[in-house]
Image (cartoon, rainbow, N blue to C red; front, side, top):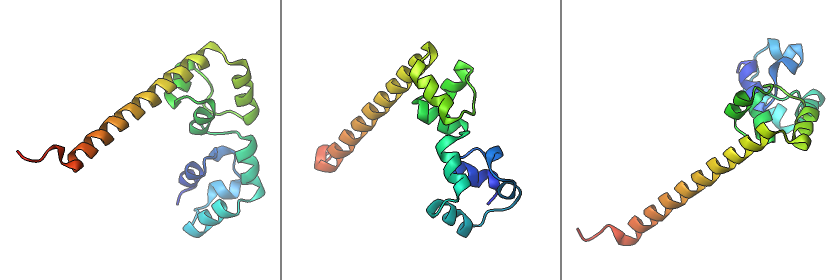
Length: 128
């Protein structure tokens, strides 16, 4: 696979990886080895960053769109993320609340669908 694909699947920021990772192809065997026995550079990247946008958003508890709306950096280190969580600027409070509402709504929809499916399977729709 391409290095960009492997980096995305590993949840790491490609430009922060070693040159040999960026310049070569990653075989399935190599990828599985990176997952099961990560080298020191990968452990350090996952621990300290810099982290890609998706990981930054997840660690902040917001969406990637929320990062964009706030004009926040797409790439941050763990220390920068911790600092934001400690300071909790207004935009982060708003985006976290928005994300919580989205999760609540998704859970409600999932619950309603499960109830409808259960009703159909228990014979609620028979006899017509």
